[in-house]
Length: 436
Image (cartoon, rainbow, N blue to C red):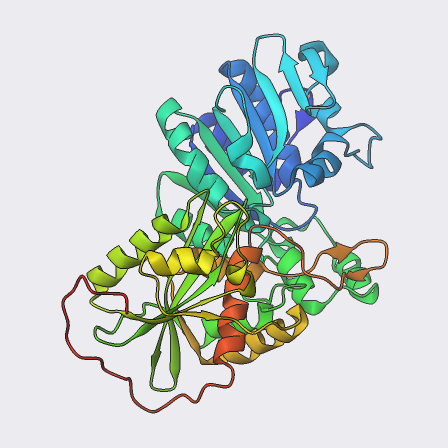
């Protein structure tokens, strides 16, 4: 198949190209193995789309600095040319802005490389076409934030990635499989034959773990996410069907576990202890809101579920007094009706991670109400050190950190707790009295 810019698609790429260029699908998911040409076809499709409809187009990776290395500066080892020069020849460009990683074409369209870590801070006219590259590693809120824009302007979205356990990438893939308006395809090396078994075996010999082999080359959602602190525990939770539909038990106390953000997200897990089960019945996260927002959200949620809260566990910095008011956030929260508040024990992060690993096997997660939290626990981990060929020793700070931190406070608070054989039922009370 000969395509624009003198580029020829590989045979196994034809289905995705037909869906975008001929069937005019506005949404597409391509779960393809490593070195299958995911970004390559996305770049050439964007070059075509940009000259069919004038507008702004983005190629979005999880982080902006990663986007520069992986796309803007990337060189095709087979040709020695930058990939953007192959997809967007100089003769179709008006300007190239290296600092902004932006190209303006001679017809007025623009294309820019961006990061999902700053999706809500991007300025300029809204995009009409977005490639979400490595979406399984990206902040899923980026899609939630941008999808209304594309819906309003009739734009398209292409998601290209390999699995990272059963996180939001898995959820999106399952949804797209069932939705006839979406193109959805999973291609492993067994489908494409693009890599030989000898090449994969050489990766094993070089130290690549079997979980990563299954994930990267065979596109397995079942494999534990390598480098993730809770990858094996969350994979087992799926196998045990402990990520499912979890009913909130009316009349059983709920407990909340917080990570308090200042300039970033505040996260809250809501749990119920029923017998020997620790049920995670809801997860909530937001950014740029004061404590009153979270107090109102909890009050509304509790009234709807006919429950009340027995305690709210927060990190130790909740006790710190602000210079401007002389009050701590604990005092402010209590004044809003969030009581009683318990301060989580101060432990090393590694100790908290170990506590979380031990408690996940007794947890049941509501798949819908905890979707973002589940994705975060599945993804939370360490970066790969390409030079040392091993994972780094410290957790990376990204979108998954907030939910993981809040869950760590849950774990260290719950780890010495004796779980009984029956739920504790509290007396019936007025539905609006949800705080003690």
